[in-house]
Figure 1: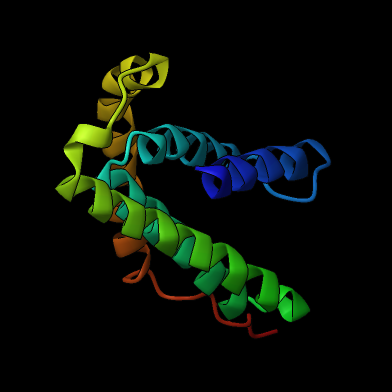
Figure 2 (figure 1 turned 180 degrees about the vertical axis):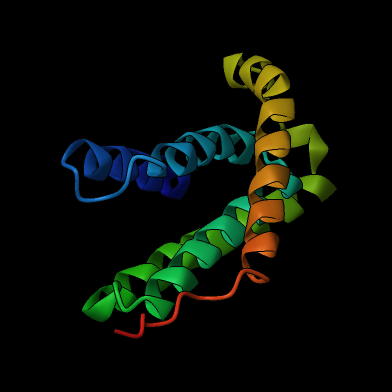
Length: 138
């Protein structure tokens, strides 16, 4: 949960400082909503948060943006993997779950999260088929 909220909050800060593009706000909103899902030990939310973060890191590496910050990316990735592990554990120990306000919020945000994730994954898949721009000939 803390990894999702941290990544979402940091993305918002970077967008406000104009370091990251404005479309990063969609990622920030998704990570914050995934944080609620991870708090409720949702296996789907944990796996999708991990996939979204790994996709963002892979794209950053491909564009040469990450540089020496790769160590931090590995640590944060391990936190996302830990959230998947905890969701798997709670799947077998449902009696330990507590119903609180987060459960009520997750009930209403779940359709939004999964719809947005489906759209983003579809757009990522489509982007693989768009040819890269080539240098223009004078």
